[in-house]
Length: 552
Image (cartoon, rainbow, N blue to C red):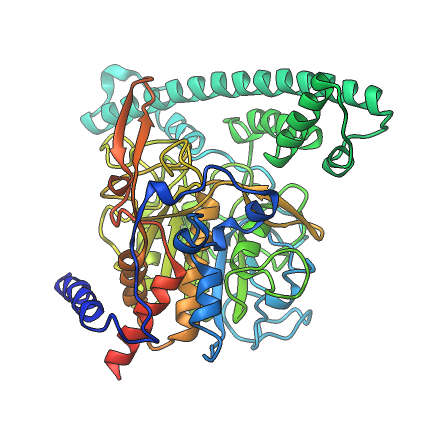
């Protein structure tokens, strides 16, 4: 720890004495809320995360500025980033050139050529598959697994005969049953809300179809229309807004189907989620499972494609979007289905990433319960010991993760790693004080924030969409970390973490926090994370340049 505190002090001192080096460019890390625009144009919203608060009045990560002013004459090295997530569309037009290819494996020969324990792992590995090409689409929530485990222990036993340890577990078991009932009620309520919304949306669309003589409703055909009828014009704008937010008719129907299947499978104690894999999820040494199909179920497991595009979509190819860094290969490692991940799969995926050359690991997911967190912590420590950054999301429950009763995994509460980063989500406007409304936060447990509201990225089958959340913010930090490691490969993982934490932009903005009990309080944005900042690529690259020069 002393080594890292010294590094932080050194960084500040070095920046102070060298503020006129590096082409006389200065790190500017404090911004006032008066700089933030009240609204963005349709063009600006497509790439707002890459903008600069001082030049563009948009609180992005200053990526365009960094490429324009810092990187034209610099050479980069290729960096492998592991995306531990759902499956990834490796054939997407904007991603296909950015996918990792295992150099030591011969495709389709049925052999483990590189002796890493995985047969024909050309593009990565799917820990939710079997040899027959089948994959888990819905997995249980972790608390359901815990209920199932406890039920086996307490079935047929008399509470009067419990030992002290059993009585404590029995109390936990009953609490989990209560949580299960509460979550089922919440799911049913959410289902009703979406069904009600769908009826209203359908009614609005039917009115527009009738008025404009349309067979179908899309953003494109609505955007091309205008009318002097105020009521219809209001409907037209509202439906376009719904579509932009991801709540089109098609998307809403998919949400409804997903909720129903989640109730039937993910929240079902009797659902045999692991049956097709044939492994023992309680044995970390049982590794003979999975398959090499990392793109087989994209219609149902698309999240990894969203994440990958933000980090690595091919830049300046006149297609789709620009990712954060080109000199990159994405290693898809599939552990996520509709439900909660298994700790075993997470731990093995981390170790696979490290052993196969990843320098940054992005895991844009988390859960409120964890039965074998020690396996994950050990794998994260393994990553640190091998100079690999592990970056994960803070979650989207609008929760203060510093409250002892609130748990979110994986985390760094045990201080297992000095190259672990947890990321919260910021927005482009001031309505919620720059905080994305749903993001979790915490001065002690969330490290840094990054843009995570209305982010345009790659979707499956050569399409693109807007999305939001801490998953997205995490991928942005992973992208900036990869950018640093690409241009400054001699910097260690812990140094890159310190640069990201130190070089972000602080905003003099107050944030209104609404607690679960409905009460509200106001906190400075700087109190929502350990660094108090939003990640900034421009500042980070300046700091990396100066630190790298000092090491020579």
